[in-house]
Length: 211
Image (cartoon, rainbow, N blue to C red; front, side, top):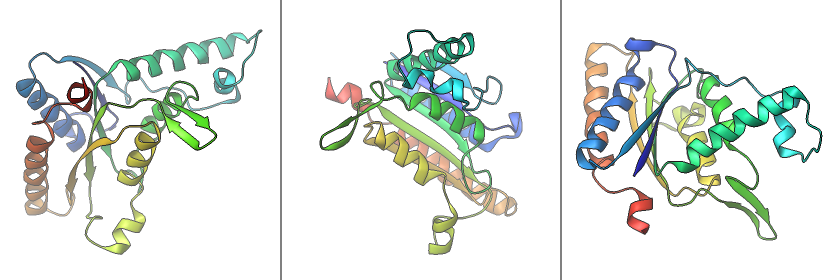
């Protein structure tokens, strides 16, 4: 089994999402010792944001420019790494009500027609089926318990939407909310997230269960 561990926080050792994503990977390995782990730190190795050259892989071109060739090679490396994984653990803090731009830049490289999805006569179809995503979400405030908070939150909703669009149905969410609302709130958030991680890492991945 292959696990891809992805971090995106810019806060280094002070990051809650990094702390919790590492915990999730460690517990997954304890429960599934045959797991091979590959690590991707998007805050350190940030993909360039989309440009016109980035679209070359989406437009057949017999004579791509050097810039398009570089962009195509980067996109191919990232989507191949993603598709090779059975389990993806994603650490995602909430920045300005959404995910870090570094994480969005990575996802933009994964969204390739013919690789992670395709369009059919019946609408789009995800091609990355059978994977498990464990989304480790950190939030300074609390958003999940009120309609107003849910309307402002575009972190969990986006990740569920895009990975679902890729055909992934086994998406396990771990939330650490209220980490900036004082010591007691932070302790409660970490304890709640730790318990959620224990539950999320117990069962096999969707790919293993389907095998």
